[in-house]
Length: 86
Image 1 (spheres, helix red, strand yellow):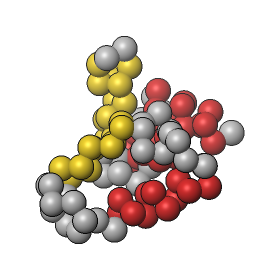
Image 2 (spheres, rainbow, N blue to C red; image 1 turned 120 degrees about the vertical axis):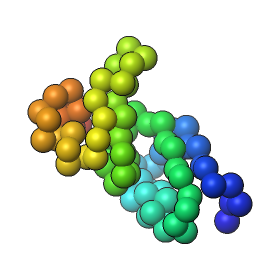
Image 3 (cartoon, rainbow, N blue to C red; image 1 turned 90 degrees about the vertical axis):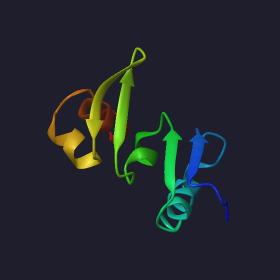
């Protein structure tokens, strides 16, 4: 178990079989309270369970919020989600 209050993950699911994405998410969700996890990912299915999501477009924050809030906005995140889940 890490002793740092912040854990930074850069594409944590990029080199694993997609069937293990849920296990990676479960591991992150099982961290004790008090940890901040920052994950940079292109995989929207990996981003879904996080408390807050920032969608970057051309180096700027285009949208931010929870997964549900971003879907309700019917903006870029929602369009990307619909495409990824199709």
